[in-house]
Length: 438
Image (tube, rainbow, N blue to C red; front, top):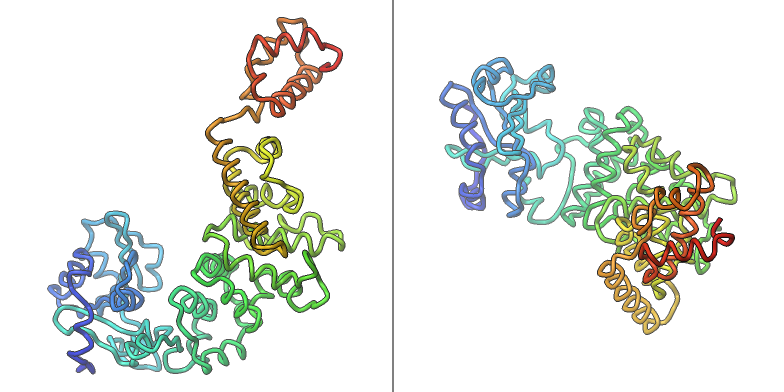
């Protein structure tokens, strides 16, 4: 077997008790069948960093057919079989098992497999017999908080251009620096990202957007010329210094400032970007820019719908200091979306030019009003009304447009005055003011 470079001092940083017992079982079972097998990649990095691990990768000398045969009694997903990879699923966790990869004509073994992994911090392996195996000084880069391509940046990028986005994503998740040679490699080969499917690009972009430092992630995407292959409108917005949104600020800077304080939720962060882009490009006649962008990046229809709800409102005009305005907003967007909209509005308030005192007052008032609204559960939709269409039919109304419009007028009355939402009261209003509501 290959004699690996080891350091007893370093490998002790991995506590076997932190490793998934089923992951260790997979490694041992493959070993018992006579195949070298190791836990590898990001799970080793996260173990060293004392982070929770949800996905476990195992690399082995066993051919994929032998892997399948060895675990035929378990739930197996063979979608990556032609690439030498299968998935075992147990207790909602995924265990990816792959045959050792070979490069440069080297016989497939652990050394060749680790050499072609993306970054040094992901190029480590572990099993109980050998301990930690680190051929690329990955643990030193972890200690220094550095991300760098393993061996040749050009080779790693050409093997899978998505690694350029992955470098940015991991840097944002772990608060690591990206080595200059790695940044240069990405800048020099940024156009290769066009070879990657938009779905894979979208998934990495979402992870960057939901990371601990989305501001830095978006800036790096822009600086490394990758943003134009994801949201070219945002790249253009950043490059056009004369575009303004609020308070005579640059639109791109507003997005970065607000992302920094907005909660990590996809709908919120997408809505922020798309709303400001929509406001920036509205003069160019791109009213449907939100849907256009999200469809191009292949987001699900539910995401497109929810972002559409958040971005069609005027964030400047919505006032949470008046409960009546909140009820009207709930009528337009639904009670289920109020909290998300408040997060956007609150972030908008925090980044405004108003005094700190006025900001605090507006936020406190808005939060108190919102709490009261949720407690009161006011009528904000036709289903909340104390009367139904059948009640109007009994009064002589015919089914059709007039009946529907009458219910909507009644709804507006109770939105303004929730205490009137009683069947008896509403029927009296209908009979006494028939001309006004018809």
